[in-house]
Image 1 (cartoon, rainbow, N blue to C red):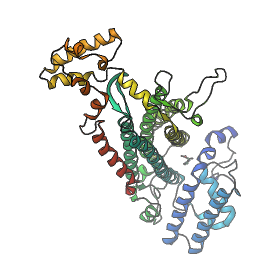
Image 2 (cartoon, protein in one colour):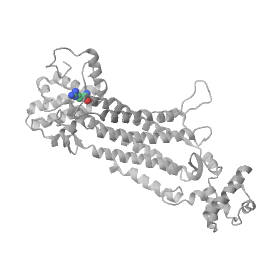
Image 3 (tube, helix red, strand yellow):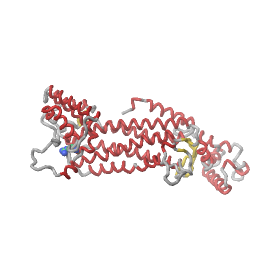
Length: 463
Ligand code: ARG
C-alpha cells in the first residue's frame, strides 16, 4: 500500500492524475532530511510519553536502516509511492510493523515537507558557502601573484586608467565575499522549525516543539503554525542570493571570454577547460565560461517562477507549493556546478602579463595622469584636461602614445611640461601613485590582499 490515504475514497486514482500529482521522482532527494526530521519527531513523541520507549526505539532504528539501505543501494526508490514521505513511512511499516504506523502521530505532511525543505536549504547554503570560499581562495591566489601585473582598466569597454590584475580580480573577490555574507544572513533567518505545526492548526497532542527544533539544529519552533506550513520565504531568499551569485559568475565569465578572445589575448584558457570546433581546426572555444553565462537564465527563472507561484496562494498549505522543488533543485545544482567549474577555469588559466601591460601602454590610460601632472605645475584642472585632450588627438593622428612624444612636442602644447613628464606618465608611476584605500597601487593593494587572506583564514565565519 503505497498511499497514505484512501479510507474516504471509493475509486482508484486515475493513472494520469497519479502521475501529475506524485512528487517522488524529484523529492526523493530529500530522503536524508525526511528521515532526520522523522527521527526527531519520534524521539519527541517518546519523550512525551505519546509513544512507548520500545516503539520509539523501533522507529528510530527502522528509519536508520532505511537510510543505510538507500545509501548502500540495497533499497531503491520505486514507482508507485506518492512522495518521499509516503515512501519512507510505507517502508518503515514494512520493516517494523505496527509501531511504524504510529510515526505520523501529531504530524502532517504539510509540516513534514516544510521541515524537510528547510533542512535541505540549510544544508545547501552551507555547501554553497564552501564552494564560494574555495573560489575566493582561487581569486585571492591570483591577486597575490599579480600585484605588479599592469593592465588597462575599462569604462564603457574603453581603456580608461591603468590598474593591476590583482586590483581587477579584487573587485570579484568583493562580489563573492558579499555572496557569502548574503548566504550567512539567510541561514541566520532560516532558524525556526515548522515541525509541530501539523496540517495548519497545530495538534492536540502535547508535543514538545522546542525539543524537535533543537534536535534538528534550529534555534526555536516557528511562532505561528499557519505560517509554519506555508512559508517559503527562506527558499525565495536563497534563490535570490543564488541569482545574485550567478549574476556575478556570469559577469566574470563574460570578461574571461573577452580576455580569451583573439582581440584581447589577456588570458589563455587551459586545454582542459576549453573545447574545439568540429569544422575549424584552429578553434579553442571558451564553452565552459559561455555555459556559466548562459545558465544564468534558468537560475533567474527559478526565482521568478517561485515568486509567481507563491503570490496568489491563500493560507495555509496548498499543493501549488510542491512546485517549489524541481525549480529550486535545478537552480541550486546549476549554481553549485558553475561555481565548481568556473573556479577550475580561473585556477588553470594563463595570464599574459606582457599583453596586458602593452595594452595598458597603448590606450592613453595615462592621459589623466598627464593632466594631473600639469595641475601639479599650477595649471587649473579644466585647462589641463583641454591641453592633454589636444595632445591625445595629436598622438592619434601620429599613431603614437603620449610616452613616445619628445619634450619639444609636449612643450608645443604647454610650456609647463618638463623632463619629469616622462616619469610622471610611465605605467609604473600611474599605478603606483594610486594609493587611496581600495586603489590599485601596490601599497594599497598589499593591505587589501592581507585583509582578504585573514578573512579567508577566519574559520568562524562559516555560517
Ligand atoms: N509533496 C508535497 C509537497 O511537496 C508534500 C506535502 C503534501 N501535503 C498534502 N497535504 N498533500 O508539497
